[in-house]
Image (tube, rainbow, N blue to C red; front, side, top):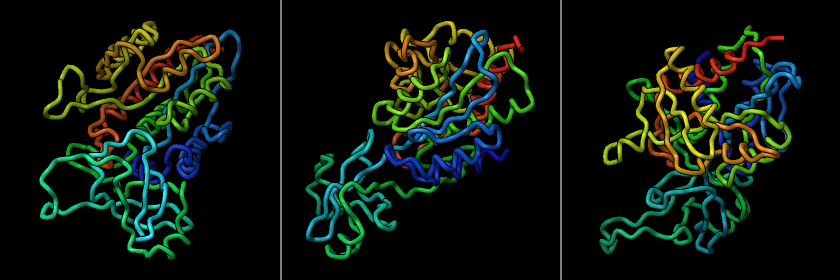
Length: 340
């Protein structure tokens, strides 16, 4: 499979929290290559694999499909757009960003920026309601195209970098989706002693909402949340970050199953998959927090792709880390050997 092009397509398709249908259709297209039992339910993309029985564990493998973005809150008579954030936006990066507004038609815009010549010299970070978007349209024309509630995304397109790295927006968590698809490719023709469901979940950036409803419906015994975490960059604490090219980051936390953490680690060693650990002292801020307390609870763990510049339009990943995340997922499914 052409993993790079899959990532490019996934990250080029917009799907802001609450309106993920476009990217959900793209992900479903790829999922259909591996199972006929796949569908979209309540916004979530779900695929089922293997015959589920009481004697065999059922695994949930998840990556969230939504991305952070913005939303139109009003239009000024001067023709500028008021907006607010959807998900965790770093306000420091907003000035002069190119955006796309999804109104009655898609229109480009620029988030307003005060030239340094006209600024007071203060490095003040504006509040979200102090920003505006300039589209070039006058008030009457703009009002016929754009309405409050319309979504806005950044316009950055994915690009290939040196050392097999990719930059773009929504790599959190479309790289996790790509890793799961790669695992499915590796599992083709394999018999395994479990059944499992793949979930590409909605609204993670709004509080893991899609994961909650899907987990209740699927009711797994074990859940793996495949997400991203912080890759080291200059100026950060190395012990708090993963590193590019060193493999998936396996979660260690009191809110996660130590049994699953240890099993994933053992598999990396036996399969010669490079890996890192990610130590968290409480909740993980991923869908694993929802999975572990679903119904009567289930064993949950996180597997994360190292990523730089999270929640910006220029996130960066390294392709080998996505591949090795997929290898680990496939190895975990194959490790259930009681085939019936």
